Length: 78
Image 1 (cartoon, helix red, strand yellow):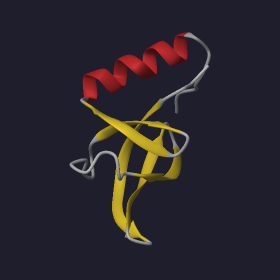
Image 2 (cartoon, one colour):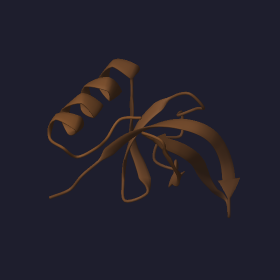
Image 3 (cartoon, rainbow, N blue to C red):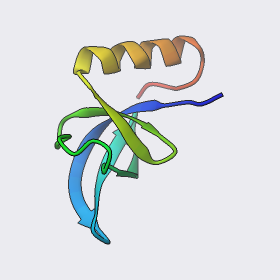
Image 4 (cartoon, rainbow, N blue to C red):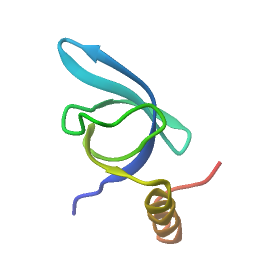
């Protein structure tokens, strides 16, 4: 089973010629590759899989995913 997790971009930068970002996943900030979402910016919500952002979400979609994951016991809230 594959799991993609929503997170909010806190910082965007380039590392070794690759577009990267610091993304907040419910209180855990991880470095995430943003190469597949070139228009994503600070403040945007993305969905990531194994360290790669694969899609941009609006805030409502991100909230729905968080609620579903919480209901399934997959995440915790802060």
